Length: 238
Ligand SMILES: *[C@@H]1O[C@H](CO)[C@@H](O)[C@H](O)[C@H]1NC(C)=O
Ligand SMILES: *[C@@H]1O[C@H](CO)[C@@H](O)[C@H](O)[C@H]1NC(C)=O
Ligand SMILES: *[C@@H]1O[C@H](CO)[C@@H](O)[C@H](O)[C@H]1NC(C)=O
Ligand SMILES: [Cu+2]
Image (cartoon, rainbow, N blue to C red; front, side, top):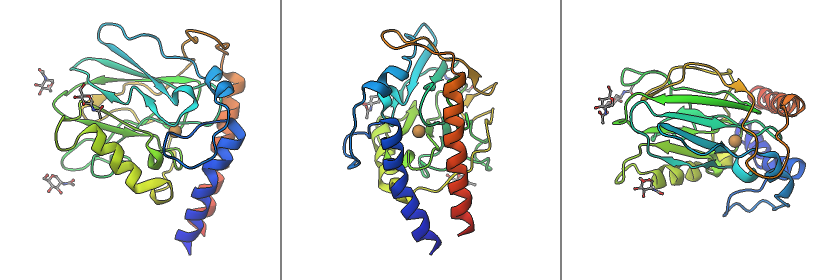
């Protein structure tokens, strides 16, 4: 009964989000596509990489993806994630190869993962502390991980590869992924270190659109988060 309710809500939400915000699903998702022009204009491009600093677009072009998603970053590299000003909130949440859509809790083998928490109009940075350990991450916004909104840093080129991680997330699927609580930002990390929660403000777009200060956009993001929190509460009490 609870599973059915959750599954029904999960399958409903992506189309709701798509209709409301004009987001496009990644290739292979059967949800209807709408014009990406509006969403694309609202998403600032991350600045170009500089020496020792890699910049990642979250929901680039209004798609449910990290761009780039497959990152190679030696020790001390800073990786900064840029969240869109408008539309639904997203997160960068550390997980594991074994459980792509589940926050990496502390265990005897690893320290707890980093988590930006659901956010919009912000940027969030991590510094690589051990490039011998693959770092796996996903977006915790409901349904996003299961449609492939995941990424990796220093994934092996054989065995547990980046491609196999994406496939594992998509095998879980939007309806199968766990509903995750948003506990706000968590600093720390395993193989990488976040020293601060997301900071407000994103980079100005490199072309087109208006950067926006983020205040109005943040409210849009927060009200969507509130809607989702309400849904999550309804599901867990079902
Ligand atoms: C720690 O790693 C070992 C060996 O890979 C594994 O058997 C064990 O289940 C892991 N423990 C936890 C708590 O993840
Ligand atoms: C990166 O740092 C980790 C942890 O200190 C260390 O084990 C590893 O050898 C370092 N990588 C390189 C290429 O030096
Ligand atoms: C990920 O990046 C590594 C290193 O650049 C590369 O060897 C590998 O083929 C890439 N995997 C995918 C799925 O793009
Ligand atoms: Cu997302």
